[in-house]
Image (tube, rainbow, N blue to C red; front, side, top):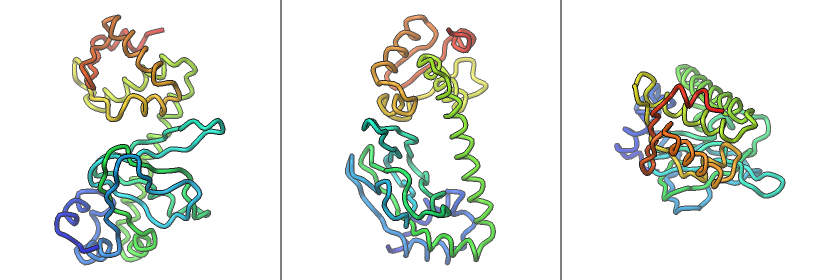
Length: 229
């Protein structure tokens, strides 16, 4: 694609591309593909050859796998100015290990793995940036595993609320955050049914522990929430 200044600026704000020179960034954009997706359109399917990773300009992409009984297990929903599938370029088997699909109308870049890996050889700072990105992803996955290890659905929802609120504002007296994705997708990440998620949220609100205003959730009593049984 043509290395438009707008896309150069957007990519430059992401740590995976900050170390690139202007020439390298322009070359990477020339070899990338600008894609506009409608809601529910696929980027790639599990098992397909892994040749690109994605950068979301606007919109959101869900990454998921199907369980043996046909249920979706959502691993992540990737929003504006985020990358996905970049770790797969270094895997031995060159196939996508999950499926990616647009949750909303989405504009994104498909960046060739071969192009980015060639730039790593030219620019050692890219290696550090990539390691930092993968370390963040690993920390997120460990946190999700910790949440999923809780057998009680209520405890999973509570841990999710606490992690989101503290990430938004750890020092606020009344931590609050907006649900980043649809409730059904959050429920999928927590391996519970959407109606279960809604019921638990409603119950915590009725108990005066949280306040819900549309997509906004405010923690009114953090101590009770942390100790809730």
